[in-house]
Structure formats: C-alpha cells, structure tokens
Image (cartoon, rainbow, N blue to C red; front, side, top):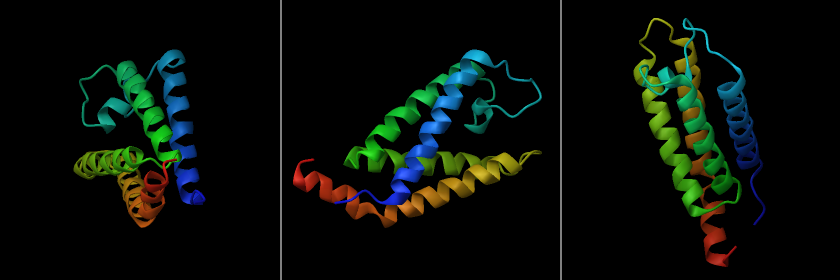
Length: 129
C-alpha cells in the first residue's frame, strides 16, 4: 500500500523539529525568559539542553517507525500525541498560553489523522513489510 501523504508530511515535520532541537541543544544558549522545551513538557526544573536532546532522539525514533508504517510507530505516535497534547492542554492556563495552545491543536490534528489512516499501518504488518 502506498504511504499516505499526511504520514509523510507529519514525519517530515517531526524530523525537521528533531534536527532543530539537536542543533539548538548544541549551539544555542536559551534565554532565561523564553519558554523552553522542558517547560513545554511540563518539566520546568529539568535541564533545557538535556530535554532538547531527549526530545530530539525520541522524535527520530518516532519518525522512523511512523514513516515506515510500523505498528509500533503508529502506537508510539498515538501515545506521543496524547501525552504531549494533554500536557499542552494543562499548560494553556499559564501566563503565556500561545505556544501551548498551538502544540495542543497540532497534537489533536496529528492524533485524528493518525487514527484516520490506521489501516495503512495494519496492512504493512499482514504483508510482512
């Protein structure tokens, strides 16, 4: 079965985000007043550079499974979208809700689309590819 275009676009988006996170973890010193990745995941006390590396590596594993239409990639994307969407929904009530609202909306869109194309993931496991 042909890979749905949305799976490719979502994978490309997450791949681009992982590369940016990786590069900013190495070359960018985050401003103390900005909302960092650690705070977006509900862990404001966690080291920002470490969180960027962890999220980047997690995203790379996620993208690999998702773009290959594996069952574990499907479930990983579902879990990631639900967890990240719930954290963002909880953090919408903070003084700076804009980045959290955008993250929540994107997580909902990815979740709905992934559920919509679930048969693409199921068929790859039955054919052995």
